[in-house]
Image (cartoon, rainbow, N blue to C red; front, side, top):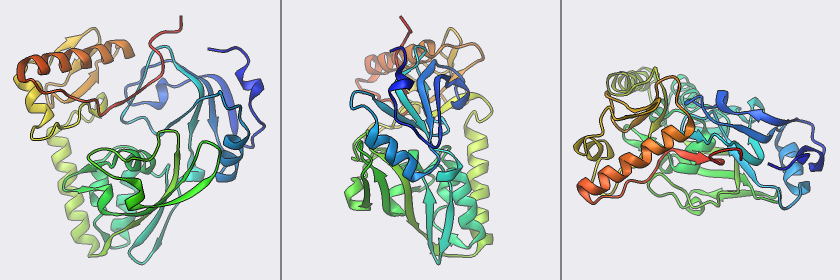
Length: 302
């Protein structure tokens, strides 16, 4: 990492921190530091920073780290983490305007209280709306493409764009928005429905998650996306990888598409175990698994 990067960055109203630890921001609780961590004060602060920063400085955005693996060598450049200033939720009829840092389950709960149905699937998606937009998150019969009507995002130079759902190019666990654009908020549409009915569906989602997923562990959610015509967990199970362990990393016995830090894993051990699972599944079935967990940074600091 380059010495003195923080001195090259423009002045901001938010907070810039050099060599900032990131492990505590992720559910895996592993990984190295950000060269610089930036917590913007608001949208204008973030846009101004992007427009004024040196062009050679990379920018990486993280949310609450529920589906993120930070490699042990840390993340070069600037890591942006949006805070409460980007987490507002407002309602207008059956429409919710939600900030990119709003927690998915908070959006679902707010919609439920307001009698807005169709968003309860978000209660089963760990993370924030920004991440949900980026990967067209979905679960329990719903996904973002069903409810997003528009989103706003900043381009790498700080320009603000209003994007329709069609322009976001949603596909299975992806959107086509360039990786270096930053979602800041979105407009979601539900339907009028009884809060009691919505709450019942959310309770069923919670029950299913508790029964099938290792929720009280250091994990990153689903490790691999389902290949066309297959379920990733079945391929992993058939390849003999349920409970497979490497160092402090382990594939869950409860749900074998969940990668777990048993307590002392490094990011390298977690990633290496994932790659070993991919290899065994490929050898056993001929099917290529693709990571659903986002991996950022470098493997070591040398």
